[in-house]
Length: 163
Picture 1: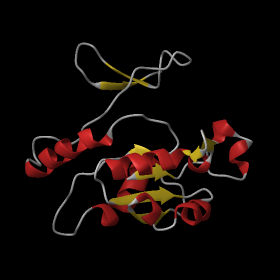
Picture 2: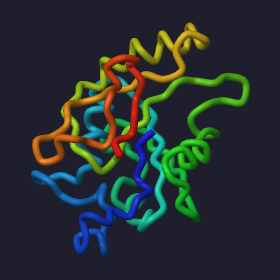
Picture 3: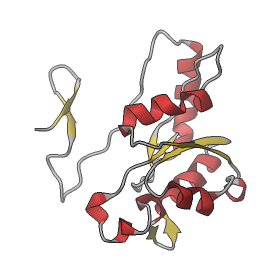
C-alpha cells in the first residue's frame, strides 16, 4: 500500500495545484520511484489511497501497467490519517477469509531501499501470523532534522514519538 492522501502542506506553494507524490524530483514523480522499485522487487499489486487532488494521482498513474503493476485506488472523501486510510483500504489489501500481510509506504518520500528484502518478511508473517504483527524499517535521522519524529528507546526497544 502506498499512502498518498496528504496535502503536503510543508511543500506549499508547489502542492497548491499538485499532490506531493506527483512532484517531480530528478525527472520523475516521487511516487514513481516506489512503483518502479516495487515492480523490480516482484510486487504485482499496489493499493494507493488518496484524498487531496486524488483524481490527479489516478490520471497520472492510471492502472499501473507501464510500471509492470496493477494499481488499485482507495479514495477518501474525508482525510482519514494513516491508520484510517489503511483501514479503509483493507478490502483491497486482504480477502474476506484471509488476512494477508502488506507493506505500507509513504508516497511522498524518497527511499533507496531494495523492497525485495520485504518479500521473505511478508511470507514469514503470512506463514506465522501470531508471531509478528508488524515489521518496521527505520532509517537514521537526516542531518537537517537530527532529533527526528520518532526514535527507539534504548532500554526497551519501543518506538517513541519525539516531543
